[in-house]
Length: 126
Image 1 (cartoon, rainbow, N blue to C red):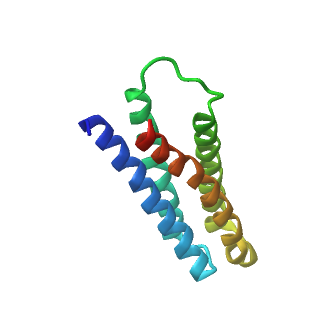
Image 2: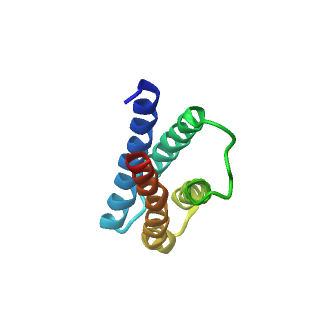
Image 3: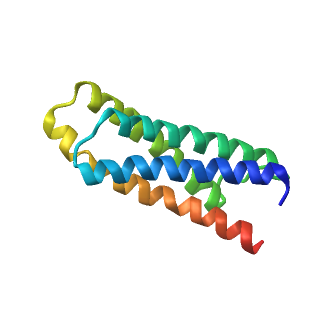
C-alpha cells in the first residue's frame, strides 16, 4: 500500500473511531456531555483530513455525482451540522434537549457508515 493511501486510510479510520466513540458513549449515557461534543468534532476533523488526503490521491477530475463522492459529501455535511448542533445543545440546551440528542446522533452515524464502508469496498475490489 502506498504511504499516501496508508495515511488517508488511517485518517478516515480515526474518524470512525472518534465519531463512533462520541455517538455510542452519548447513546449509552443518554445525556450529551461536553466530551461527546469533542469526540464529534475530532471525528469530523479526521474525516475532513482523510477525505482531503484521498482527494489528493485520486486521479483525474472528481465526479461529484458519483455515488461514493455524493454519499461522502452528504455524510460530511451531516457530521458538521451534528457537531454544530451538539455544541449549541451542550452549551445552552435544555435538559430535555441533552437527554434526547442521542436519537439523532445514531442516524447521522449510520448515514456516515455508508461512504466509509463504500470506500473500503471500492479500495478492495477496484
